[in-house]
Each structure stands twice: as C-alpha cells, then as structure tokens.
Image (tube, rainbow, N blue to C red; front, side, top):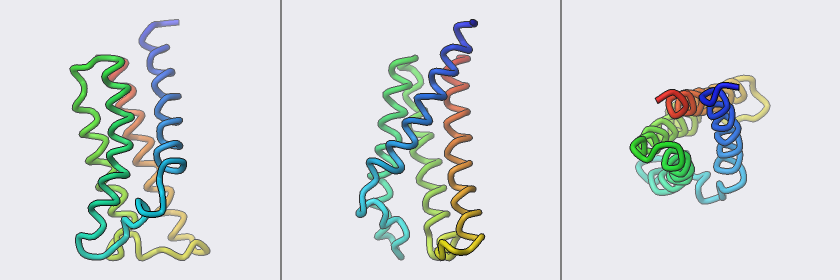
Length: 127
C-alpha cells in the first residue's frame, strides 16, 4: 500500500479516537458549561478546545513538527462550532433532546468536527 495512504488511514483512526476521548471521555461537567451567557463560557470552552488542540498538536509533531499550527486551527474551529452549537442565542436554543432540531444541530456539530479532522489528516499525509 502507498505510504501516504497508510499514513492517512492511521491518522483517520487517530482522529476518530481523539475526538471520542476529548469530546466524551475527558470532557467534564465544568467544560460542558459552554452554553453560559455573556463571556462566562470562555474558560470552560477554551479548556475543552485546548484538550482537542493538544492531541492534534501531538499528531502534527509526530508527523511533521512544522505543521504545529494545525493545532491552532483545530482549536479555533472547535471553539467556534461548539459555541455556535451551545450558545443560547444560536443553535443552543434547541436543547430539548426529544426534538429533531436538537439532533440535527448535534449532527452538524459532529460533522464539522469530523470534516476538520479529515482535512487535517489529509494535509498531514500529503504535505
């Protein structure tokens, strides 16, 4: 198999595991306060996104340290998407888990994260 394809597949697996661990295993109750009004959401959301960025940084440093900035990209995209999804003025207003709108917004959030990881894995494998 082509070395780039093997690296790409390995990175895809890494980023799927990274997403699960950072979004579900390591995210604690305090980090879930990303829906707070005003600017009170910034510390918990920043720590949560920092966990994501740290794991992306580890992958980038392993593959090619000059692509460390991908961790910043992951942080910014994750922070923006999570705030849009959780913010009470944005998609966070759909908080009833029995509504279709809640699950559509949850799906959009997950899709954006996975597409971000797909792009980062592709970039690392091809550059």
